[in-house]
Image (tube, rainbow, N blue to C red; front, side, top):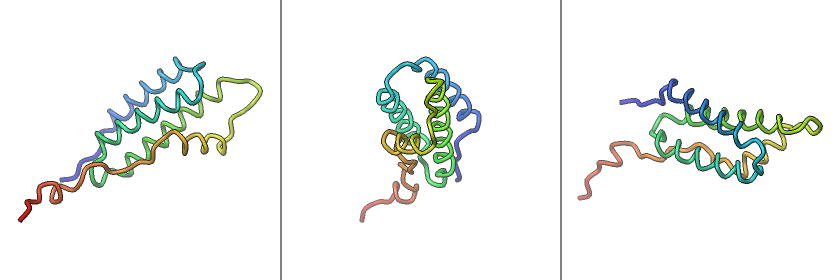
Length: 111
């Protein structure tokens, strides 16, 4: 059985993250980064089933893109480059990973 993340749920969650990033616009970057990291870890723990890596990776990219947009709104002088954002993403956002084993590994009986 193949399980994939529902597009509807991903869109809804991204909308919630976008609203929350707007609310945290003036919070320190490390604080927002830690919060985003916990959001991503929770998402990966819930949706991290086998053969769903593409959806997890896409979700991580979209969250980092929303964060980039939010950070660019903070200043009219210094524009945030993708290189700086990449360093922030590597520091605060965990990589996408499959957290649940395949069912045959999970249900294997020891002999």
